[in-house]
Amino acid sequence: MRVKRAVSARKRKKRYLKRVKGFRGAVSRRISLARDKFFKAGVYAYTGRKDKKGDFRRLWITRINAAARLEGMKYNELIHGLKLANININRKMLAEIAVNDFDSFKEYCSIAKKALTK
Image (cartoon, rainbow, N blue to C red; front, side, top):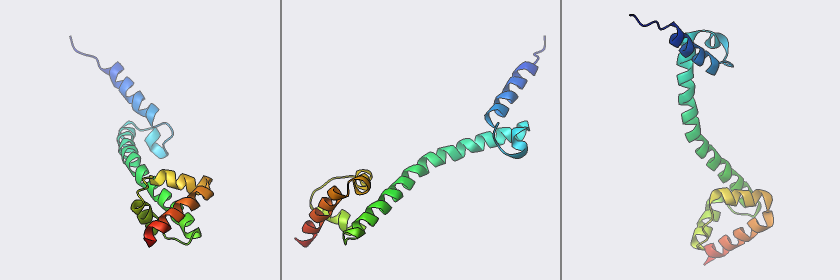
């Protein structure tokens, strides 16, 4: 007896079309295009998750630099001064402090300045 594959084939095709429902153009209607775009979207999603980490780090550094310049310092001077003062604070927290609690950030800047002058 031969195997009839219509049910499983239709199921597989519907699965791809369901996953590319909001895609533009013929991608959301044609099976072969849908399958290719579905896999490519997965690749983009994977690389996007990796890129997000660097994007956030760049954002934090930009915010820290802007706040440090208000205090008359450069970003690299601030980070170097904090390292000399043995203050271990990551860039995420330092950026958060710079945005939400500027008085505390001023303290960090003054500590860094003192460490740099020694």
